[in-house]
Length: 422
Image (cartoon, rainbow, N blue to C red):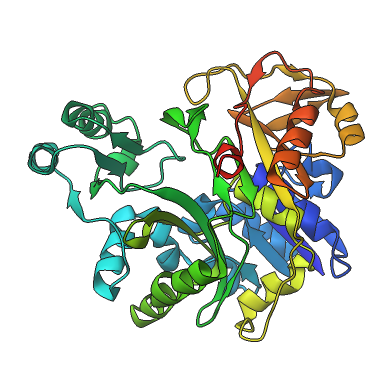
């Protein structure tokens, strides 16, 4: 098969690494890719949101499967355009991608189909949003409705903090059009869990669970990010909990989306809160998590390509996947200043020494310039290791981190703390 992966981050590097190992893959392209992906695929200088360019390239190269990594092109309708050209594409169509493209859409779906989630309100007027916050009190959660690169959510501990979040989104326009509407939610207390399932429109196949670390600081402090690290499996995801999540959250969503005229295909990523009243849905993402994808691909024993094809072709009902029992753990190396402003173009050295530690580096924001590797993003590298226990995997990952020479970057030093301290 001739396969094209769309995207250029750590998630896409992990997908390319897994796909390149499939005997079904004859040729692998990635658009736009990065310096690490170039080791596994031929990188093509087409942006992930350039729908016209991607469709033209896929037609020209007679691509058999397009795997869409990020949410942006999904919301823009890349899958719709590819299917209109009779091409197979992994990911939801634009109307189904609204599960991530609009938090209000997702919350309304939950309300219609009885899926457990936090109580909420939707607002396009700042004063109405503030009145709701004063009525509900704090803690409370303020979310930009649209795509905001993981930065549009404020878990406000005080009413003033929540009111400030409203001003930031609606008055200061911090998130652009994504913040023109807000979803304000009840605060849910408990342990967070990332749950993944492949979906073919009718059936769903649960994947391994993972836990990520959204806050920038150790001990889960500071502002939220796109993710500072993750590990899999998640000790909290028991067989009983998986069955409960599939029965009460994933399958009602699959059936509800089909009933609403927007059947879902691709990977469905449920962000869950394990509350005292059972699991509740925090959010849906319509793509593999980043950096959760990195640890999932590290643990996957099965060939990923047939699973992706089965999702596209409505053939998941009798499908199964095998997973390694070991724990995989990834540590994000980010540019100093992230998630605020940061410098680009700084040089990263020592990457060739990481292999000696047994770890794998998935590139998230890099480019090659001659023999140099330069940082181009906020989250730059995903240093990933595995071992029989979470503590050993953590030790292996940080040993690899310490082998990298990049004074312009930083990482959290406590990835995996929740599982280790159980």
